[in-house]
Length: 222
Picture 1: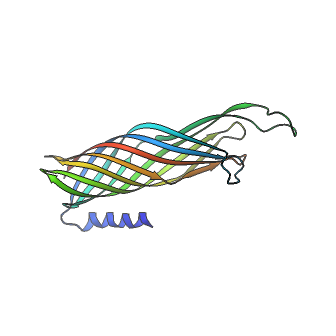
Picture 2: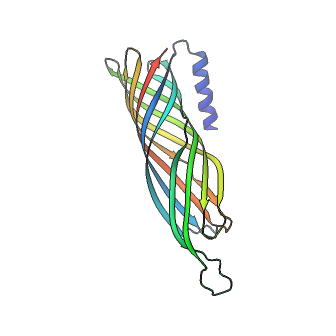
Picture 3: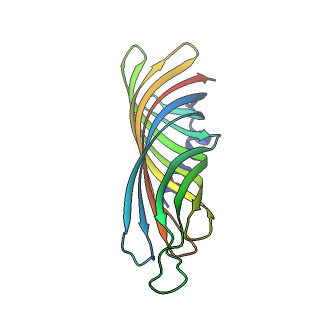
């Protein structure tokens, strides 16, 4: 519902506002992707292992933005490439023994990764001019992306799961008007909803992903 409301406001702003000035540009971002990965070996709602993972990712995106008035802009940002947001590995002994009390037959490494694509952010940016075209702004955004999770387990068959990834973005930055458009520097945090996948031996793997991003944007107005 919140995505529908923001999308309607976004479209109404583009269609009805006579003040609106459009801009298009690109953004270079450096992100610290933090993940908490939990394993439930037999899917009984008891967490058996927990691992915290941090990945540094640099990526580019393109955006289209429209100023509805002097103090409010709306926009959409798209990462057109695929990015690996989460990756982990751990050593485990297979529990597939031939008989009761038998020793594990093999050991190996469990691996998992989550690749994100079609990462789309709809955002609102209230702003206030400080002086001479320099503005301070905040960002409120809703995020939607496709995620492909690949799981390799020593005790079960490999599995690939495709699902949607939703999140909320909050940011704060500075915006400088230029002769051709504007430049923005922003720090933001995105809190994504949990994603999960279950292997053929009933091990449920859940990942909670958050990002901290420093980004630089350049846009041309038209």
